[in-house]
Length: 271
Image 1 (cartoon, rainbow, N blue to C red):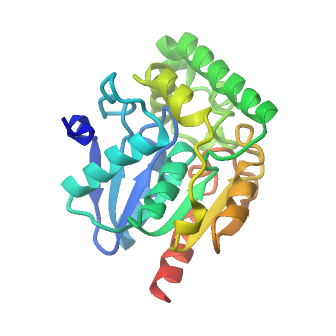
Image 2 (cartoon, rainbow, N blue to C red):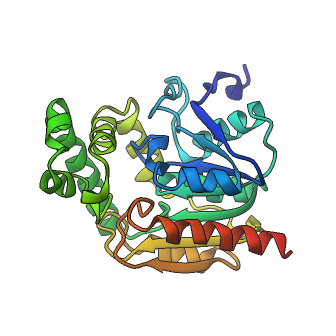
């Protein structure tokens, strides 16, 4: 059987009109990660937000398939085919950003904005990232049962979301509780860490021929040098620092993220 026949249908949310923009969240994050920017993006673009396999509302890949970057991208491609999308602009965060770059390598992206995409780092940096992910999983797992009342308090909300967002106090309590529960319960978290995040499956960056913007928050405690390396390796990529923003910069600097998407879309239109 063709392996792609086993790829699951992904949870998708569509809204808006205009050029198609695909949104891909990070590890153990649902499409709600884009809640701060989605309404405005939907006024400018036809937004297709996808939960990656094994997180949010999407089922995990079946056991014979390893959820590495290539296979995750296969699943995203299959879902885009189901949605009738051939080529689209893509905004991805962390693991979603890496998949966005892989879509560009496969010529399925008209432009890419990748925020703190996973990429090449030194072994000590990768060990540090693994420890951060494991620690976050254990902490959120312990606190998930009381996430509702706990996230009503600005202090705990800011502290618990600190590995993702600098301005966690701005996150609505219900959204914060949902993020904590998702990180604690994402179905395929451990396999995704093992096969998609920790290994370095280097892309053939020379095949990326669309406009690419790679960004990283100045207060990102998860990503290290990977964004800088990718910006240097991807032909023509532009690197942008996001002041006072964390790993998932969407909620910290939403207007800046929206401007980055516009920058990439305009660059594609100018070709």
